[in-house]
Image 1 (cartoon, one colour):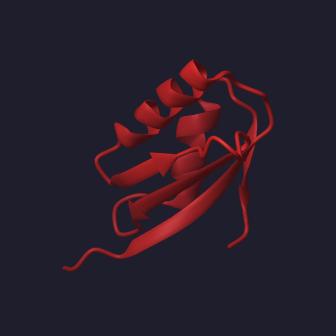
Image 2: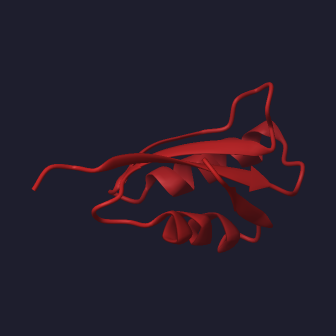
Length: 77
């Protein structure tokens, strides 16, 4: 079965320093179904995550973020 690559945009409510953002990106990427997770320097409240929708959902990815104590929500795309 082929991968179903999807993107989700997550709005981070807190203002995190660059080190905390890098740790959060790394934590999300630990999921084997996540291809990439990135918070651009010029958009520190937005995380773009690319993932295989056949093995993880956007809600589960959001849980990876909120499970680390960060208040966040999915942004429609």
